[in-house]
Length: 271
Image (cartoon, rainbow, N blue to C red; front, side, top):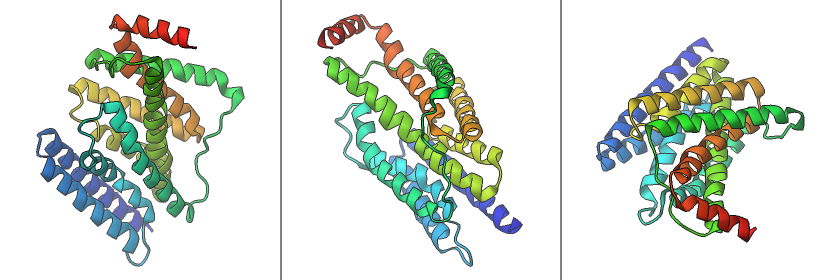
């Protein structure tokens, strides 16, 4: 069993290095090379996790998640869509992938982190909202995204829905729910599993901003991994992640735009 665990660490490290190289190629606009590398990684991990002899390591199939995300993002016809609309389109096949992996791994590991609201922890949720908003504010200091675009109050509500449901909830379910749970149960080490998940999440963020921005994302991802392990619940991490998304992508960009007041007034009239 010790040898199996060391072998799985080697496979995870190799997969991480390949994903890092693929991300560098994509950042440098070598899209075909990056996608090809991700495709090879996806095939090899599927073969290894499914047919490894004498005992398949299905838990390592979760390491294909970065490849699935990138292949969906770069192969679907998203060129004419805004980033948030594109995120919603990508979330559909990715969500189906999450459900499939959860069903497959549930056969071996029936106990999963819950997504159940504990009303007695409502003060904690408020604290996590504040912490997530603070994290979003810090990220905004390094990179200031533009508003998604003008639109009706309903469209702004749609933007908020995408940031909360298609990004915060799905990403937490994917990384802290499926991936972190599988790696924790495979390695019997919560710290290593959380660290690997944080590194993978940060790798997928390369090229989005300067190095202090990327380092901050890693620190926040590591904090979310720790929170997920200590609570064994996805509500807290999702609440914090959603607050960071709303602050970074919608609230702060809107506060710097004179059109936000008009949108808020229109929303109040509409309501």
